[in-house]
Image 1 (tube, rainbow, N blue to C red):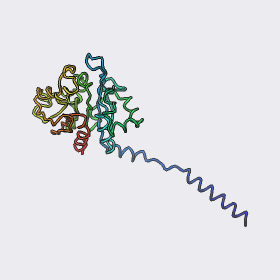
Image 2 (cartoon, rainbow, N blue to C red):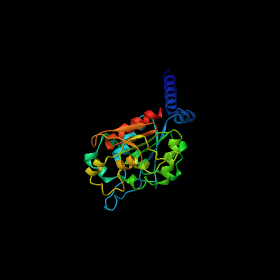
Image 3 (cartoon, rainbow, N blue to C red):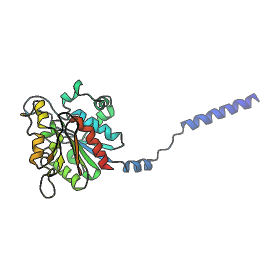
Image 4 (cartoon, rainbow, N blue to C red):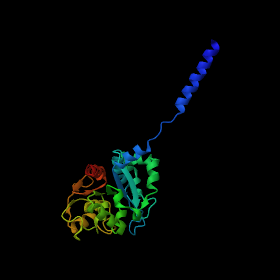
Length: 263
């Protein structure tokens, strides 16, 4: 009897181990089907790292990337990162200072997965608008020099807009609309409610005479209906498919408006 009980115990043990070692099969078709219905947003970042002739570095403002990135990612939006040159886009070193840290930037600093994605942005010239539901441009001073005049960026924005897809930009990034046109040849921002980094905010950071143009002035000159609030306070504006934010503090608001426009 003792022998029979020992044999049964061994059989039970082997059966249990076998059951534990069995892997639950992954339904790849189901996974792909879920992803197919998830919204996809393209983030376009600057590749420019020189602050005019000052000898100082610039790039994109990390908070203006991190806050919208996590706001959308946490809502199951699939995000692809692109830049004119591809690879690692330059982060404005000032934006990494202790005074400018937020919950989103601190999360980014601990997020090696997103850091790796950022280090491997795809080249803007390879992007196909048809693959995405919207496009978002983080700010920082860099876009004033490259994305404002980049032919691939200009065509991409026009393609998104003309195909009824949201286009969003925050702080200095509305600079990317400088040469973007409507189908009738008029500036994209003409007669549309917009905002962007204010002249007084630019003066406060003492770069009025360094930047190639002032975002507020450009938007007004292109016929935009420009609005702003007190410096450094959150302010985001949506006019149809066009979404803009005034400054770094407006980043998450822009992301919220963009997500709402995706529904």
